[in-house]
Length: 121
Length: 108
Image (cartoon, rainbow over all chains, first blue to last red):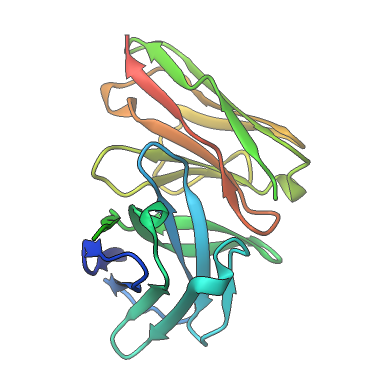
């Protein structure tokens, strides 16, 4: 059974780069879209972006200038980098797998438990 | 982007009761590309419904989704103790994908 696990530093200093990795276990990472989603405390969920195992990416326009995603199929992992972070980037970060509904409409059929990242000096 | 508004914010009910959760979109959701997720503290969010009304694998038939266009509903026919959680709607027909703010179903 496929499982996702986020990992990375729980504390990042302002203006630095947040880096997280999602490890996929119980199956292959290949031929799927993989997303990052976050939720600041007391606020709603925000889709950050996604990556296909070929390396193709799509980012939320609100974060596009600061986001980079990558994938390492040999390790069954994909990663998120968010640069120039501020306190507003403090959130629980989730990784998720996507499944196609039709044509270019994809929903999230499997999520990780999430990891809290705080931005503070 | 499409803004999703969920109401009520909190639903206080007892086990065995029926729960009706609403999600309204700021513009029409293409091809009923709407999903519902259940989220409990410390756990991974779980997909319940996609395509507005299609139950995900292994989801109890107590959960049913309906609606189209801009108005969608998730109904839990008879609440079980494990159903008390936060529920989110999400549209995936337009980019960027967006979520509602959530409805908390709590014990009365």
